Image (cartoon, rainbow, N blue to C red; front, side, top):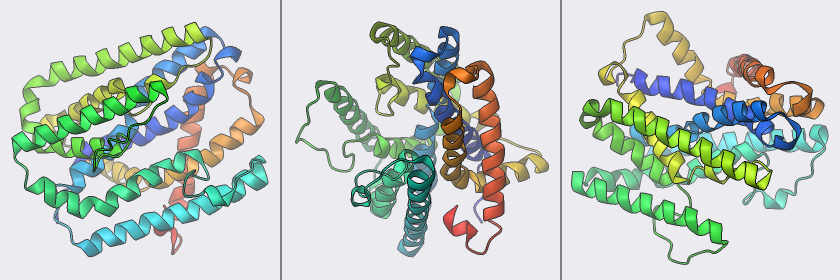
Length: 337
């Protein structure tokens, strides 16, 4: 049995907490005109710092799966599970949104637009899992020089696509494997950092400086453009933004170096992390129900961000965890969470 890497489990634990923070702070950042400047800056800082969560999820998958020998049948089971999860939660959110939230949705658009926005993650990860066995064979035959070259091509492609989007133009020069999003690059980047992690051990201070510097620059640029446009500016918070890519990669690399790359935790802490990580996908899927219910009855200006952001984050995590824990006790629960 493969030994569990608790550096990765710690990254997963932190990342799904950050996902909830991002969704809560988004509600306040987008209410820029209705809340105080101090509240906005507070929400923006937490939002920007937490943006590493999605890159980390993709990098975790790449680090784990591209270093593991798996049969096609096992990958097929993984794909089947994620399809079931997507179908089930699309149905849940369709009825939740149309019957409770009062929003319209045309089921004919289900292949283009998720029923609920946060389900985009499933739309992104399923195609990656579909080609993962073949991608793994390709990666296993690459040496360090090829790994670096492939990473450079992916990063350049992603950055080019990101800046091209500012011109409202599209290119027909699509690069195979990468598509028009950053997610496949993150997937390979996780594998790259995991594979060459020993070389990063002497660069901890540099990685920390890169993470803090890129995050601070992103906060400053977002603030400047927000003040200029008098509306919350989100383009620098997109996952294809070079600053988010740099922050995500450096954060992931730093976390992988805790405890010299092999963090040792007490038995009771490991048990709690195992329990939380086992529920992490379910927490991601279900927490929007509780958040949207809050949004339906509470406007951002009704409760200060200083109180609402940390308080609501904790409440959402506790309620979501309790719900998923009970769901997973059902005979079919583990198939949908």
